Image 1 (tube, rainbow, N blue to C red):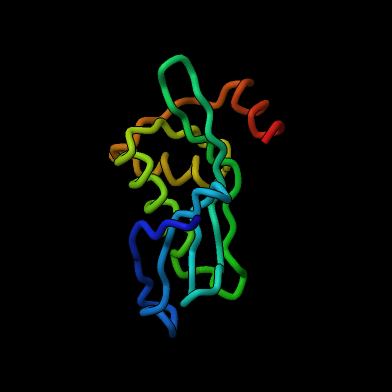
Image 2: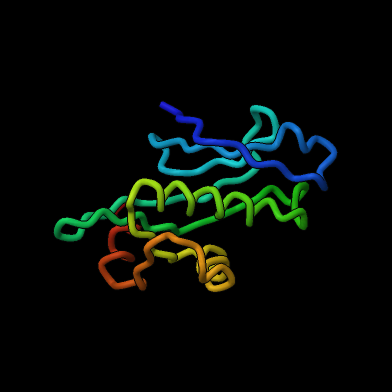
Amino acid sequence: MSETTGEARSPEHPHAADISVREDVRRRRFELLDGETVIGATHWVPFEVSDETVRIFHHTTVDEAYGGQGLASMLVRHASDRTAEEGITLVPVCPYVKRWLEKHEDHPVRRSPVRPEHLEAIRNA
């Protein structure tokens, strides 16, 4: 089941009105869409630590044809916003997500450093 969780737009793309982001819980990813075509995604793995829910972001991509337009940033911002709204801690294994969070230190999402058990969870997913 896909769940649309909001939209974001990019004015640089000719079809900017059709660019949006949605969460696909079943596939454990946030998808970047041009209309109904998936043009990028940031993937996550759920992880439980004691009484804390963690979302480990491990891979982010955007189709090359859409590169250089800030769409990866838009995608990660939306994913981080939703993660924060849900009260989930974000673990940035993906280098892009890690850099984005470093540039946006004021973003309200709770963060946790990458630990060996997070990497193991990705391997076992």
